[in-house]
Length: 293
Image (cartoon, rainbow, N blue to C red; front, side, top):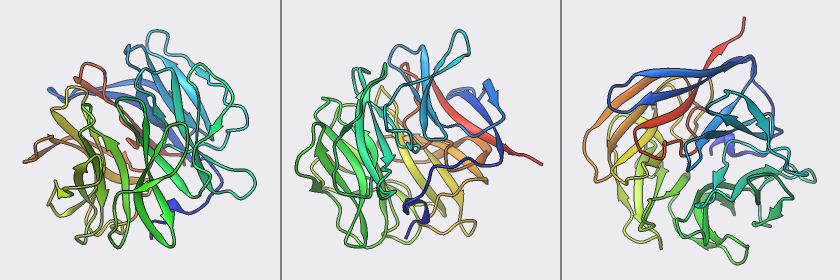
């Protein structure tokens, strides 16, 4: 079982956080801002002007021009983790908020400019990861009857549909830009590896085969590349993606094939949990960390 999927109170870590970008061709890294507290999981907005990240249960908007952060009003949803996803038109954001009554994660939506949260998944725990390109459907990891599988649900709520049915953790579902596929990660072959399936759950195909634990595939807006984060084999349990580890951000073709290492860093949980591709597919945003003394 993935310990990071257990109900938990949103809490900080004793770290400095660096909000960075990397050029996917040259590998050149640029530090946008540094924080003396925990921030996680930057999304890039469609206009390229802002990054949306979470910190201590709240969402923030980071202005790329002024390098200033502004909190996004979210009503009672102030225990959000790093699973936030922007709607295709960027009018709304969906979050995994740990409900006050029982501490379990449920999915909510609210306006990206700020507003009242709306419950989408009454069942818990549910951990958001993807929003379909047509705006109609959310994809998420959920624990039901002791198994973590991938589900979808209409954006406005309704009946959930189970897409995977294999022992062990299935996590991180995210749609391809054309909506044809859902990419995800699964431990079904031993180590955590990247997989892909049709949006209806059919044709589940393994996409990575190396001796690492590979998590959270994110497809570039042009549909050509997949970025994911890798932990060394033996450094973590296959079903765990902890913080404060030496990890790599890797890049591969979305049609499968060899990967290349784009960035080596100290990070893990919070580094690249959400799709952080720039709209032009030329850069990725991510967070690296340094431990405080």
